[in-house]
Image 1 (cartoon, rainbow, N blue to C red):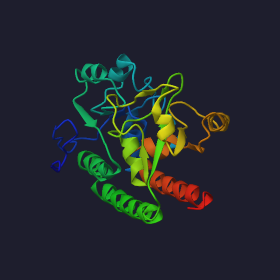
Image 2: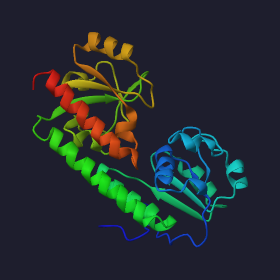
Image 3: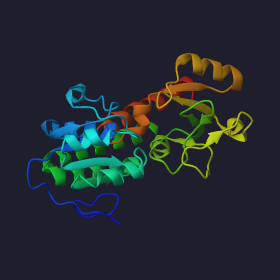
Image 4: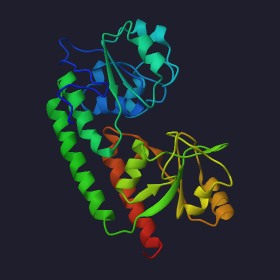
Length: 271
């Protein structure tokens, strides 16, 4: 069922801001989206991980996505707080509700959820035109990605986001859905956890046609890819984690880059 105008992922309908908003963001990709919508002067708080665009770094930091300084946040007197189900802890968000009038909950689960995200922010913060422009750009990026990859055979991949222990992503995540859009289906096919641990002797390793190492949250490097290729005998590639896990405005360039990588890998393999 399609969400109504201004309805966030918690089912709360938000009215347009009645006065110039003071926005706090606990999510790096949402901070970037706020700036892309022309709301830079209204962003009053961010996490230390909110580094895009560069201009955002002038905004006061209030800690991390999981452990923000709530006293510092209160002192900055935000009217709106933007959060995400996966990236922020429920207890932190509930504590912030005591002093932030409007908490906007997001939870994109597929790339196709991005237009809804643009529209939500556009409605609340009076940037409907800018949101529509981003939606048009996103639609073109999605179509271009589909054209670049539709003739390629799908592959089962192991997408690693952490080591000690090895961790991957379940298919019910935004990251997995983004990879699937360019023809990479993540393993395992079924998992109880959203970010399951993978033992060294797990059958998942054998089932993967190739292994992808994300540059975030664990900062995998080329040496890690080389070592894992020697150990497994599989092709291993580094993937910019922002291409797969950052929704919002970065998803536009991310989809194009990921599709280009997918096509390039296939060409190199003679597919």
